[in-house]
View 1 (spheres, rainbow over the protein chains, first blue to last red):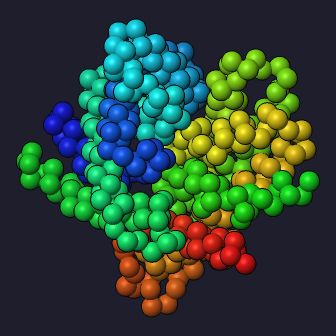
View 2: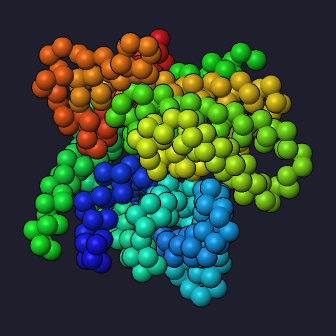
Length: 196
Length: 206
């Protein structure tokens, strides 16, 4: 598949949150205000791109040559946990401003299923290094898009009257459901029309 | 002691009350059988990790406890993955990427951190069973609603001459397809959570 195809697929057609259900916890938990949603979105995008590359290297240069592919779940989660720590340290040293913006979200990302998800999906799709990297960035941007839309809608919902049992989390799910309905407009036919 | 078991079923139900482990709850709940398979996997991993964390709680240094828990959990997930792939490959295929993703199911790490590293083995086992069964029941409830309306069927294990698929007359020919799609999962979850909040409110007023 072409690189543009991969980007459109992961941002719109197979949007991680709205069609694959990966990364729902931060989608519901961190979408209360726009600023933290954007911070979380960029932090996830960054870690997903890094994790895609790191897991590709581990898979093709360690797991496959040693014939221990069954250890992929353990090795990927350890690589991601180490990577998140490393990213945290590096950002703290290089850019305190960026650390201030993203810092509190980084520890949460280790247990974000979207990050482990992209590593596993890259392996299943047999992507090469560059394709994995692009898929990581695109899936992260899809996550950013969904969480940003969600946070702006939730900011508006605050001033609306909502039946009491629906306040908070339930209305967020219903909103997410309606967003997912809208995203159904993006399907493989769109990809065929665009790229032929 | 029995309280440790029953609290996970309804009062502290991991999916509907604490709102953890959402990704697999919505991702696999298109068919009842998928929910059962995912539930069994989670119960096994939760039981294993709670037992080991509870046994090792005095030996794991506090600073590296989270990575240590993750390694314990990932080992049990790998066991589940290999067993499922070998014995029930059809189920393994339909659960797809969600089987290895049990590793990052917040319920499991959550119970290790919040319960098993402070309590005895016996309490941890009961806690794991209660939470695991509570999670499974929640998944079955979501899947039942989605499959009955979205496909018009209820899919269970095939036993003997019974194919494992129950067809609902009237719905099987003209199902409400949106329930089976991604949007349906989020809507069903929203309404169920509202229902549980409503019940909780009524109980508190009494």
